[in-house]
Image (tube, rainbow over all chains, first blue to last red; front, side):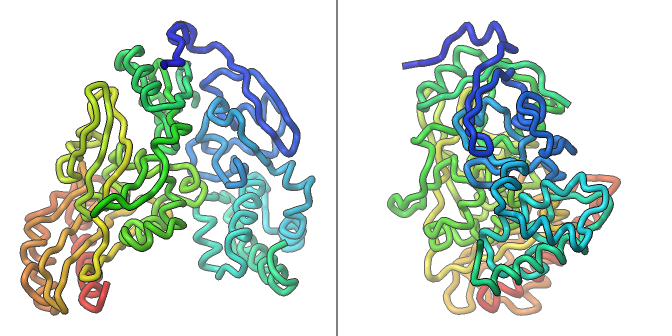
Length: 174
Length: 286
């Protein structure tokens, strides 16, 4: 009935083997239970596009897609994600699904230092997959959990707004 | 900052989860969404020896009608409070509160049961269980039991949950045709913790209020029902005078904590403003 091995309690930092599908590829790695998904992505898998910011779920720099939804990679342990499908900014870039968002961010200089940009893009991608024509207020609302310490919000909102318009003129979400 | 080393166990059933907790003594924590627990572990405010992941327990999922109640499984995520049609129809106050809970990415992971168990006095959902007269169902080493929300929140982050118990579901009385609700909060920034927030549920005939439950959050150590204020509203229609009387009654019901950022008098003032706005809206249909 239990499935619980009491020896677990004696070796708290023992690593476990976890498997994910990251950016379309099956990967396995050894992680200690206390390593966050963020640590695992950046250190073990060398996917450094996912940024470590506040590591408290407040700044949004570490957003990734977990089974298709944006989540903070700093707010879960890698062991919790065992078996999940994860898409990082690298995967979203390679697949081309956010190419128009990236081009518009670039065109409008919707970044200053760029540290927050991966999280902003993951969040914008999620917003536009749920709401075809968000208002500027909707966009600001959706970005409320993404800090830009350079305060470049105006251009970021402009870029997301422009992509939403362009996509809906082309006949909906790409 | 990093959490202290711990062991991790993914439970497939409630029995497995309870058994693992019992074997670890009190030095274990259940984890579901983890949106509050993981930061607490990172800051080492908590340092359990064992983390028991209950996210994959099917029995804790699902939203369904059960008699006069809507049964909301503990693992229902905040984003589902927005997307689930049964919530919108039978627990519209929770649907109205959901967009105010943190940010979209937090809502994708955070769970309703976890929020209620965590009992953050600044959180929206624990306070709404009070307004809704909900019942919290929990299971532990000595079996399953249900506790009224009125008896659930004991003190700061302290609830009726005993060591080794976990929330299985929250039972919310079905929303009825003669009821009205309102939710609002005042925050410096959308998605931030509210300076003061409130939810209310009233049963009315026409303009006359028969019953009303008003619950505030971010005003004390626990979510707070304002029973004296509620009493001023029962049996009457909502006019300007009645609303002013309710606002005046609030002072006896609330004792906001002293803080450098928000002095008690200011928080009480904000609570009055919010109450006035919400009762005004309730008077014209909520």
